[in-house]
View 1: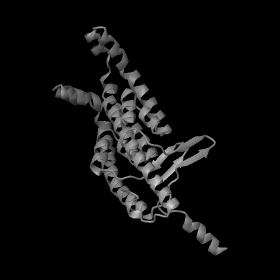
View 2: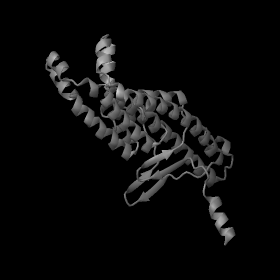
View 3: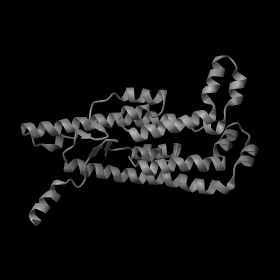
View 4: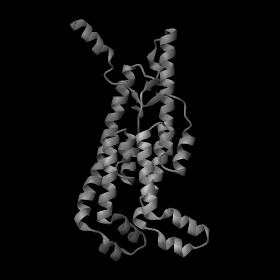
Length: 261
């Protein structure tokens, strides 16, 4: 009985490279720590999305949304860009700024530190070479590995953030991004301003814009495009690894040094 239990435990990989569920494909892959930290600086939480730490990332993005609104960070940035430093100083709320800066800097540091550790875990998982599942069927849906077009993923998110994640089968993250972007569009009046501008009503289109909500949108758009593109690239790599593992098992090729190259 003890021997059978040990056999079952030994068959379970200690560090799997990927996990398939009805919610999407979650997997380890090497990332540039500086790039991840940069995205955390652009919008707290985005670096953690790249690390597949979705719960932490969602909470950090919501923190950025609410505390930035209370502290009036975006409005102060806008006045600073325009050279009106007195108005920037007057509008900012010091009661919230200190808490905002602490969490902001922690988000950058934590994403950098976590990336370094995730890269180490990725290397160990590749050395372990646990079998990757390529196809699962669950009551809520079917999930599988397939070759994707990174450009199609990027263009989908360019037209509307979240569509690239939907293309990559990250359903929860996709609808979170789509819902969030709808809120920013509505509160910033961006689409109304675009329609007015197309009709030549430039002054009215500028006056109707809400700068606080508008300044969130470039980071969200850029982050969604980058995440969709890099996820598609890494999904393709995971697809190739699974195919090589299958062929190695099927035809008796046992040299695992080329599996991940």
